Length: 347
Image (cartoon, rainbow, N blue to C red):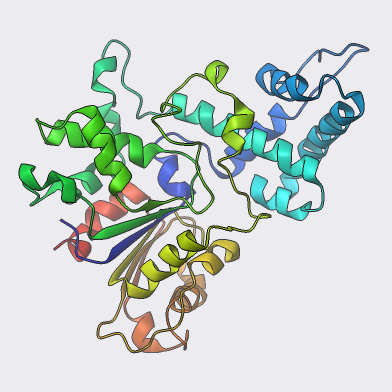
């Protein structure tokens, strides 16, 4: 069982362990999916057919709009290399609604495909298991779930996760999918519907949305069965403000009240840090402990990183008493980090 008021902040690096593309791999995939060549016909000679059919189905009766869409695709293909993410590229062109629209289509396509190809998907011939347990054992989610279940009796199963919060900046539903099946595996009398309700009751917040409810779009659904425009209704990009005031209050309240804050696979982008930033409260009766992966970073940036983290919850981001309680494991991925740091945030 985790300590009370432990908050997990999940970034793209945490989903990479499940086989989802991040960074350059994701940008390269989107760049290739934005390449359409037409040869005097309405049907492209090359390009992603699912994406083409999606936008053509919407704009087939509006040739000017369709032309604008594929010009936007060309802009993404030609310029995305200059951005750190598709969200950043969309934000750069925030005054162009076409870029936002087709950028979301690209995101939806990439994440739906990635979930279906995730290494969490059950091995062929063992579909009833729902999860590739051997593969999941090499990620952080397996020890996370064991710690979540530890000390919770079967009659208390509905209380799972009530003392923690998860702020997941990723669009995928890997955490929800795994926990749904892991709960059934751990508690013999819990069926799928009950497990799904337990996960739904846990405080798992997606600030920028997700592909949607697993009950509506199953994890691993093949691309050909997914309406990408329907999925985009659940997505929010950096260029769009998070308008759910209740969710923002939940996020910032969690950071403000947390005893432990655990960052995994998180890149500390300014946009995301701003969303996490809580009202300053230096009068809490306890100090916060912060634990973080730092894969790809070095100690050269340690002071700046500690200051950014401290600024989330303290008036003086340079105060050494806060810096001393921040532990960063450099060049370590989430699975190893979680196993080595676990004792620091379990009860």
